[in-house]
Image 1 (cartoon, helix red, strand yellow):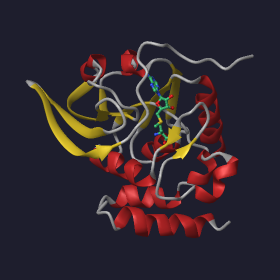
Image 2 (tube, helix red, strand yellow):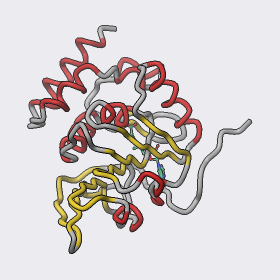
Image 3 (cartoon, protein in one colour):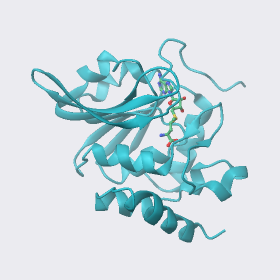
Amino acid sequence: MNFAKMRQLMINRQIISRNIRDQRVISVMGYMPRHKFVPDKLQKDSYADYPLPIDNNQTISQPYIVALMTENLSLSSQDRVLEVGTGSGYQTAILSKLCAHVYTIERIETLLKKSKDIFRELNITNISTKLSDGSLGWEEFAPFDAIIVTAAAVNIPPLLIEQLQINGRLIIPLGSGFGQILTLSIKKSDGLDEHHICGCSFVPLIEKEGIERTKP
Ligand code: SAM
């Protein structure tokens, strides 16, 4: 399969044509090998315009949604970013090329192990991973310049707001059920500035059921 060609078509038809303008985001998505993060049996769909199933009933997000969420974080190369919901690790890898360091948390051990193997294979060294409930954040490395939550919640987990820097950006799908609103919040000294970006559909953020360990 000609993955480079498929990737270029993805960039033209799904990313640029839908008004993603940040050249850094476009450039990273133009070379990041998304097919490495996709299950073997779905390789031919790696660059398709929809989310794909990965292990443990989770999903790798649609490329356009990855681009949109990343662009809205307005990252600079000095930023430290917290990601909740590593999933396949694709979004994490994209972020890692646009900021200084990514701290990513996943609650399913199998997924985290797989994504760590891919980061190693791709020689990405500015990602720290943690098996935990990401709604608690990662206190030790707070405050973060940006936080991205790639699973849907009814409200923003309060500890994530606490662990965000003033003027920091937090993006999260908010709502219950099948449809949510992708929401960007900017932290000000007197509260959050909220902006609704678009409708979206994400798997839920699981906050109280703890972590899912790999069976021995
Ligand atoms: N951006 C990812 C990608 O590109 O593959 C997609 C992430 S997937 C839509 C959402 C992920 O959030 C799942 O892997 C799920 O296990 C994880 N998740 C759900 N609740 C979580 C929690 N409380 N803490 C950490 N991860 C969580």
